Each structure stands twice: as structure tokens, then as C-alpha cells.
Amino acid sequence: MRIIFARHGKDDERYRGGWSDLELLPSGVLQAQKMAEKLKSCDITEIIASDLPRTMQTAGIAGDALGLPVHPEPRLREINNGKLSGMLNTDALREYPGVFFSTLGFDEPYPDGE
Image (tube, rainbow, N blue to C red; front, side, top):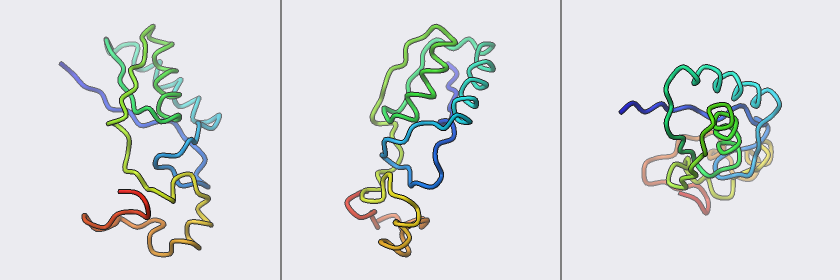
């Protein structure tokens, strides 16, 4: 068995991602389409993706190109950044200084996150 990991296409970098509802930008859609073309030669048999919109959108583009359904899997979500999720970076920097682009300590959660 071979497992291929792929990141979602580009989303709006003005916002914190995490568990947000951000969707792909047009450039992210193009990235996903290019990825899908490359995957056609990889004998993909199953697509499993995080259930977040930007990952489902990316995986859906690949699935359409490969003729495969996408199986959403919430356990593949990235870290829950709590109150910062979907927040404008400028607001996050002001409201949560030191947490905005922080790599938190192992036992230090995001506000209302993990």
C-alpha cells in the first residue's frame, strides 16, 4: 500500500486557517487541478480528506478528475486553533499577541482550542 499526502490548495492568507470555513482562492483551485492531473498516473484507489471546506474542495477536484468519491475524515483535521480560527491575521495579532504565529508549547492550548 502506498499513501500519498497532499496539502489543500491556497486559501486567503489574510485569515488564520485552523478549523475555519475558508475555501480555496482561484489560484488554489488551479493548484488542485494541477495536482489532480499529476495524480492520474499514480493508480489512486481511494481519497480520504479532512472534512474542512478547503480540504474537501481540493480533494473533490482530485476525485472528479480520478472518478473517485472523497471520504471525509474529521480526524485528519489540523490543530484546532480555537478563537483564532478564521480570524483576520491583523485581529488575531491584536487580540492574542504572542499566540498569532506562535508554535505553542506542547501543553499550551490556543484560546478555546487545543
